[in-house]
Image 1: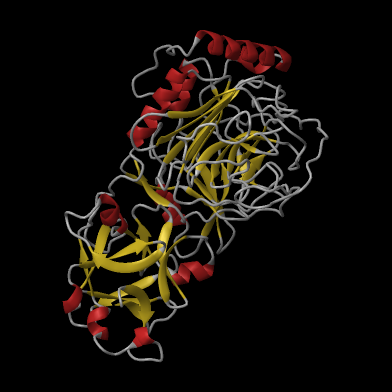
Image 2 (image 1 turned 180 degrees about the vertical axis):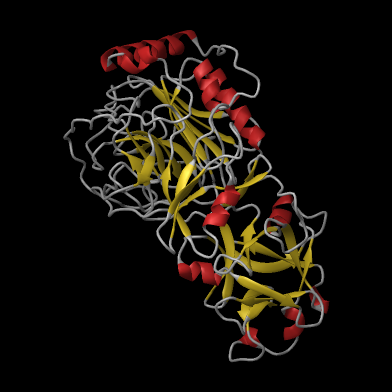
Length: 554
């Protein structure tokens, strides 16, 4: 997607699209790795024949209905399930786990700031979860960024930090520790994209081109989104430029409404087909029930497109339940989309021309050759649910890393009040066992090693993964971690014995004479006396002393 000027109910953005179509870059040769093999006949089949077969298969599926896939082995992972359905993965990217039961290679690469050294982060076991402890050890005492995300498929379509494009300067790597999360009962890290970050592979193997059929999904988050272009995962141009309608085929997730009307507040799962984020063949939503996912912490977003005359969009809560289809119908009616003209690059976090003003979260995603059956999609969604994204950490009520806690005020007026977030601000309010699930989740925090100093702590929101308590202009807020030194310092607090003689007080890392304090139900970093009202010496020792308790929402 490019940022083109147009008027809608969200904003005006823009650039005039180009109509040229570049020759796709040569496909890269795979490097040896211990992974599932693709039959040689498939690797050598001429592209034109593959295209014809893919289109025929897609049309047959549409005419005959979605059938059940061949039986897959118990415990099969997404790419095993898609392979069993006859639509193998041609790209499989994940920060948190293997996507094949037999995969035992690296997931991603990190580079540390101290000396520029790099290392690969792999799995605890074949078919298992990321070895996050290896990242913690390698990055100890410094910071790391993610420089490469490996493709687990035999195609080796690895993603590296994206270069400059028609709408954006060269990107930077995402901070490696910005999105800690629990998956499969293990502490792992997701990918947290801020504006100016993105990943790409312009020289791929096996990805759909020129009207071939494909499917794709990603697990993302509804809590870290905006209305800028374009948080995408999928098929894009090979030259980082907007080369015209139909030259992209990627999932988009965010609150940008390209074609009015869009219903609700979003975020929506949309198809970035270049020069438009499509919710239907008309562009705008034809589904009044599709008001977006809302702030679900974990979302499955899915797109499939036969490349000729049909595409479909689905979403689900990645923690429970099944997929909901928001659109299934014809390609966009505007010229250039039927058939599609995909170029076969893979993009993550930006638009096709590196429009990189968006934000987003990425945990895993795959792309397939051909359109998966609905039954295969359902089986993959069930597997995603089994991961238990954002599940309990297994530790509660302490200030140890990974512990889930709530923070209770100890001032006599307010001993039933807890630190919570509300409209992005940190406040205290009464929370009890009869409080709503939202209130109890808002009042639950996960202790992380201090983002600026591992001997201190940072507090990650339980229901907004990757968001931390940080101070800004002395006021404490809940905000997404952007990897900057300033954010790290603002979000780090150093515990010590409570100033009142009870509980724990938390000194600001970069303003060490200021402590986490409640004042008039809002949270500040406050000194004991000063020119600000919240620095008042009255009840200061009580207001900066906190009881660390078991979490309201474990």
